[in-house]
Image (cartoon, rainbow, N blue to C red; front, side, top):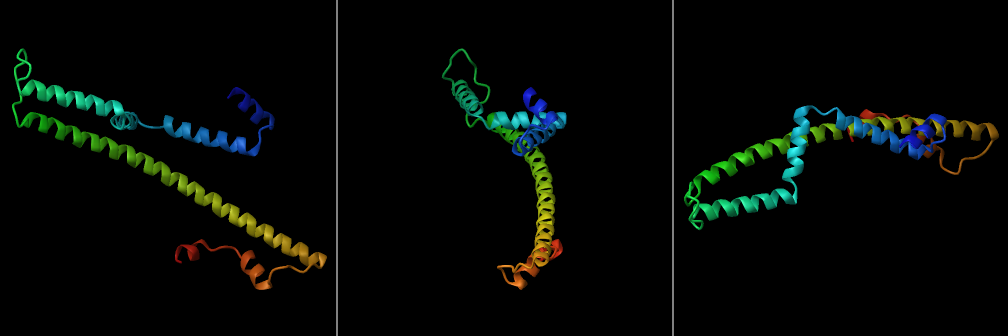
Amino acid sequence: MRRALENSRRGNEKPQERNIHAIVALEEEALHSRSLGDRISDAITHFSGSISFIILHVLWFVAWIVVNVGLIPEAAPFDPFPFNFLTLVVSLEAIFLSTFVLMSQNRVSHQADKRAHLDLQVNLLAEQEATMMLQMLQRICHHLGLEAETSDDEVQRLIRKTDVHTLVNR
């Protein structure tokens, strides 16, 4: 990482390396700018989507059922069949887990919207640059007296600036 920073400072870094480092920096910034609530929500969502979470729940349910059907004489059943308290606990857990998952999804969706907006801006800029290059090439061809291999209608259509509102309404 240190060498990449030194290369970028010296201008030795290739364009694709600069892009990769820029994307990594943006991702790190997004991760570090999360609120405490977002970090907690992401951690809970990450854990609840793991195999460890499933194993923990299988063990918990088996232990709960074994104790409450009286298979362990030393342990007094506290939630006899049909396990109403277990149902309540699992329902509450589902409510909280779904809320944490939704919080994480909202944050990720907001981040994706920001990326899509940036992507649109870059695409529009690239389109404007391409249009400008086509216009310059057409002027060079006219100046040198060269005939274009495409029809004038096609060239004229391509060198016009793209109206974003027209594209959106198609």
